[in-house]
Length: 572
Image 1 (cartoon, rainbow, N blue to C red):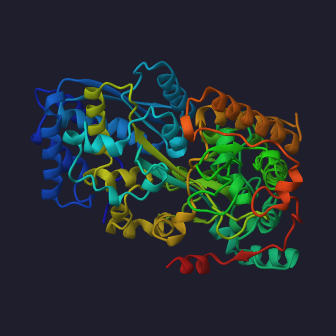
Image 2: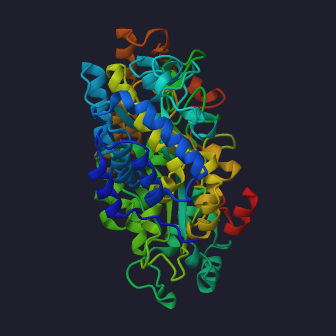
């Protein structure tokens, strides 16, 4: 089946011309379904039209209104902003401006609106990483209450919450849903499948290291593979230029903090066992009590932000950047580093956000075969020496619709209609082909993704596997994401630059996190679910106790690899 993944500019222009209350209605909806959706939906055409008819009717009271929403800039949201926003306007008569800005800027705007009460945006697609913030500050609307109360008349009967795969990440300990997933992507290990299966490479690796070249299960094997490929001559495979065994980034930038809170620490083994997040200590190193109140971040208070596992994580990241990575990577951000593996000179990457997969499957690039299949594959990221079974092993970004209480009800209703439209079963399969960020189980199982799976390097197999649940966003231990997140990139940046040792940087980080927690406790703004800090005590008492934090152990265990095909078979 030929899948029309790229939307036509003509379609967008046509919808824009049709937009406005004078033209809104089912004719515009049918034109959209004809031109953009076709059979790329889990719904039949009759069901699509019924869903659109409900939207037309529900939106009628708001025709002529102009609303503003915002999200970070990734391919999924570009598709929404350029194509789906125009379609929504044409169908409903509600003029929607969907702004695209950096993720850090989204958090800043959200924080400003929460602090000032001024309605900057009518809805935000912001990470579920803020679930602990939204639950404790109670400035985001509970969607559970909203859908049953004020928003009942604008809540689609075909929304089908049970079909969403990420609701456990957007539900707080009080059982309330605060955010509706819009896009979801994981971080996974990425590697050159063709290089790993080359006979000469396999023979040379086995001779040098004494075990088989394969998907690394632990960091010891990852390091050996990084060393093996860095500077290797691959001219026998027709590959020219300098080869590197690792790709990462190190610029002192907000995205540097995500690299660590987005599960680099948990992959190393920092934090306790638990799904979706470790309890009582999470991958930020924050400990909570039995009532989910944060009680510490430093080891002296039972936290793990500066324990041996955390130091090991930062130490290894810096070492691999310096030894096995393109020199320019040290000055790159998340968005700059993401497309680099597509250039064809990187052997593996510990931690690839799958939102970059669209850039890795373009025709004619060095990492694609002529038949449209990739020369690379995705697999679970290897774990560090402090990791144990039952601890989360990776991160999923769940960008989710969030409506603040400071947004007037009529504007909130119009924005909620748009949020439901772009996540609806009518459009979700097509949107997922554009951005490859999955939110619905029905979409993941759609035949079009079975057909496309061989060209996506294991992405579909991962999302259909039971392993998926071990990848999760930041959990509810973090009481104020905007304030705490900025501390991470600033302090990790000091370690990256050499201004501080990893231990020194993490000591400073945990102390600064605790200052924020203490201020929140004194202010009392989060009530009986806000921080209640432990008294510091001899760190050794915590290190001797079970679970996190942990003391230093032998950090160079026996390397372990697994064959990729064997790994995939284990998911079936």
